[in-house]
Length: 242
Length: 155
Image (cartoon, rainbow over all chains, first blue to last red; front, side):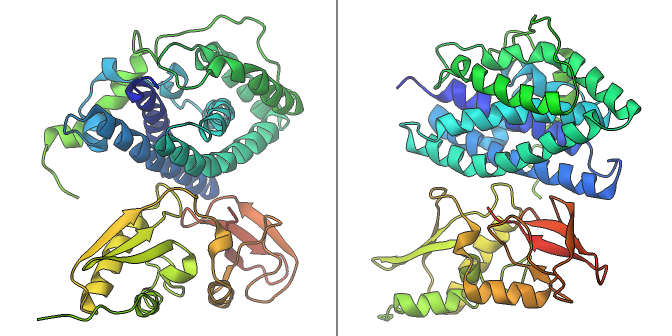
């Protein structure tokens, strides 16, 4: 098997960046129940990050740990998908981003459960239970808001239109991927078509895709701003202990 | 000085007296997260599996296990994290489920929701949110007595 480091960084950076984004809703979500749900989703993702980046650090073997990877790398070293670094905007947009990621994430983790690397298979097995729950919730929310009021429908369609150009990157693959993500596209299309159709939303016909996140070639400008906030404390106070 | 090693059964009994930090009415053994206890020469190895990967109680749980065993005279303890097989609510003990219900938290059901309100026992319940006060719980409400209550998610 090829060196899994790059792939582990991709998995860990996806959950780290999305986990941080979702945590930005903590205390300001539209209603208390949604606030708690978003914070719990973020917590699951950060927990998964500790597992993925912990294994990446072991694999790298340079004396760094998960925290060092999370807080002491700069934008160009991050390997997350462009989708997850997109800003929250409104609640509908946040839930659409969550749904598109959850759909992809659940398929990737299901495939990784049978990885020949037992550490990777164990993290995938653990994470999949949590992500299945996330997908159930984001699907229900996308349907409720898409097929809701005129205003909620408009916002969900706007979210889908804005985020669709970031979907394609999730299925681009290279030699660092431990699984063939391209092969997961038909299952993703089936899942998303079903939910978005029930939500009375229309999938954009233009399949142009932004890329450069998972390879690190070119992130959007949003990631740097997010990282500046996320990393401030451990960088300003390097030996700070909780 | 030669210390006699406590038996494995004795250690399980001690661990069954360590409360879960978030839901102190049940023990760590009731929760099903202690997956094994073994003597490796004079070191006691305890295998622990996390409930949710991001659960902040995990660190406290590890500390509580070490403290409890140290208090019982076991000085060398190693904790081993085991992710697979992943924790499931099937591992909650029947004793633990009964204690949860009694405490006001509806125990997990394979059907995906509580069968009755833990307070007034009415079957008329509805979901408020899929998530609750800790990663392992969801929020429900009884439509008869109108009390909201926690439901232990089934995973």
